[in-house]
Image 1 (cartoon, helix red, strand yellow):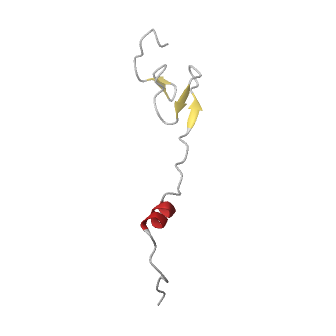
Image 2 (image 1 turned 180 degrees about the vertical axis):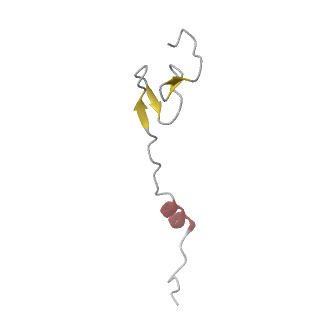
Image 3 (image 1 turned 45 degrees about the vertical axis):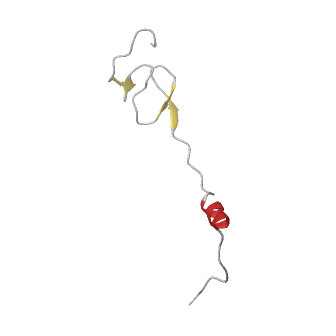
Length: 62
């Protein structure tokens, strides 16, 4: 059976565990107002999702 040759220090163990990256969120252009928005979510600028108005947005933003 395989046995570790020596103790792995906390710093070495933690630095090995720290090397992972988050993936970037999917950001696309809104087809209505052409602002950048997260995919599969309502546009915060115009309130549209999938070609339909879902939220009422203030006139100041639109």
